[in-house]
Amino acid sequence: MSNEVRSGGRNDGGEKEVKIENIINELNAMDRDAKIAAINEIKLALHEISPFKDEPVDCVLWIKNNEITANDYNPNKVAPPEMELLEVSIMHDGYTQPIVTWPRDDGQHEVVDGFHRSRVGKESKVVSNRVGGYLPVVEIRSEQRGKNDRVASTIRHNRARGKHQIDAMSEIVLELKNRNWTNARIARELGMDEDEILRLCQITGLEHLFSDQDFSRAWEASDSIHAYEPLTDDVNPDELDARTVNTSDPHRKFHTFDKWECHKAGFYASKKDGMTADECKQAYAEFLRDSERFRDAANGVINLWHNSCEHYLTNKAMNRIAWIGQAAMCYATGVPSVFCSGFSLLTEQEQETANKVALEVLNKWLFVNGMPPASMEDALSVGRQVEIY
Image (cartoon, rainbow, N blue to C red; front, side):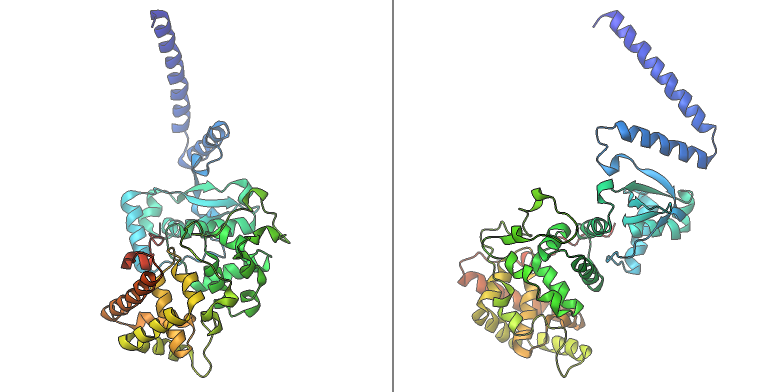
């Protein structure tokens, strides 16, 4: 490299350093709020010319926390101990992830993902004082700011790392159904299996949602999702070939819900005649405590519920242990799966014993059907449920 080129490089670099230093001096002369506003403007200007302008995380802005508001649909609930842990995490590690928002017409930034992070920034005096009443924010892509897309985005974020509150999730599905979304589209957009959509429809207690025909047709060999003409919310034609979760597994088998023996037995009912909800939950616990009774009923399921077992037990992405327990309960007593929280009434030892019985029966079914045995971890399939941040 010639001296002239090196000299030119130094001069150019020196000029850039002077310009940057001038900007920094101007910023340092401002009070805190003015400085933050100016830095936000600079970030937005840089974002416009950035090679990564399509990625929201390319532009993190600091917004006053009173300008950030919760949405009215988030189904992800966090218990007090976990909220305290999140506060400790932010206190010690700082904000490592921004809050995902969209800008409303009233000037508020509505949360799409990160509601609990925003709560900590507002409610924790230590954190709020440290960040001066501001919160780190990114804005969701402009093409995803419609209500349907925001709801779907929130659920995708939540499902990628944490548990949902089931009742709230069923309300989300109900809203999307009322917006004329097919089960196939809901499953695709929210990262669910269509089995899960069916379960959530069942929880609402609205039979017309459960019995709609798009669910059964979506499982036909022709994959007739192409037959649907959504009444609202245009679908990108490039997405029409998308299929539901875990359909690429060559061992996965599907049957339409009208052929599920569990459905006919009342597995998806919302109540049990002659029993209260508490009585159903207690009956659940009593049934699972009786290992021999549970084992006998579970063996009845794998021997007689051929279609149901093929449909559910070949799906490695779901909790097959839970399904064995719920199916056996319905098979033996007629109590539907909606009361499966009776499992939580068992002691840890009783839960472990019940899980082992279910795994034993599952592996018996897998062996008979020429499939390798499953470990407890594989059968529970809890890998999706990670953290709350």
